Length: 156
Image 1: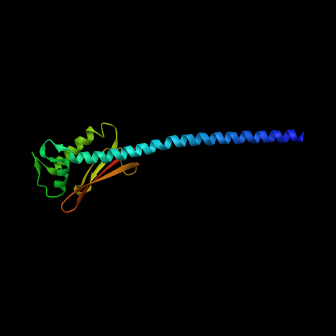
Image 2: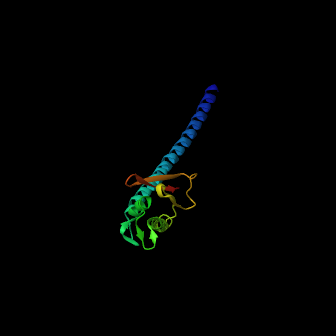
């Protein structure tokens, strides 16, 4: 009788261990599958922000055919000599950036905040503030003397 009771307790213990192991395996499978998605999204946001800033600085401005957007940003931070029609380089930079961001990041439903420190331009939508997690990508344009720092923050 004692042997049967011991066997029954042993089987109960094995069943409990098997249930715990299955629960651990399910938890691990969930964690392993969810981690790459976060990593992938972070990489995509970083890559998107970096590529956007690089491309943005090389875009030619139709209102100012002999200048790129990067050139207008540099002029706005420095000498302020360029005039495109009736707008100076700072007004044109803000206008072109707003249109560019609206037709790209805004169109795809991305929350963003673009800051150009040295000229005081900050453009963004309400979905991306300092409290919301996001990825920042800096871009530096040369200025003689100094630099102009652009930062694009894309939020989740």
